[in-house]
Amino acid sequence: MPTITFLVLIEFLFDIGGFSDYTSGMRILGIDPGMGTTGYGMIEARMGRIYLLEGGVIRTKGTSETAFRLLEIRKGISEIITQFSPDVMAVENLYSHYAHPTTAIIMGHARGVMFLAAAEAG
Image (cartoon, rainbow, N blue to C red; front, side, top):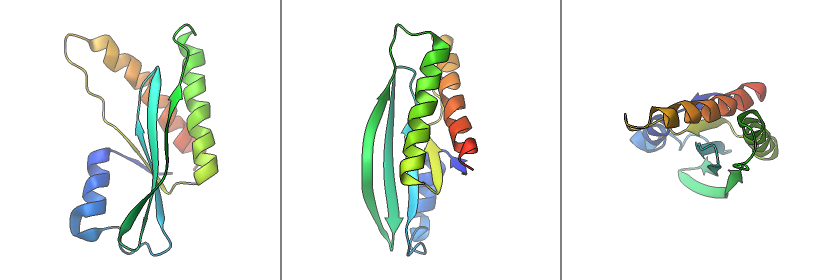
């Protein structure tokens, strides 16, 4: 499944009504990545309108090792992909202040398993 950033998604959806041609509906999985809490929203763009199908969070245990937390995130994203069969996935870009570079690295790990889940789903 193709992956895009939120900015590209917004441009696609609202720049000259880019989603109005999808009469049967285009499903879009939007993700706000996090190691402890990952937020997601599943929307469907159909005939010029946007419908929220589901929104929620995937939580990991802060006491677990990083590898197991990443596995929990991948499993959660994979379950959502299996349940809703999105056409595209939008993942928020990384942002971290220079004073906290470790945060960006950790977020990069989380984003990586999200892209892995998307690639596994085709």
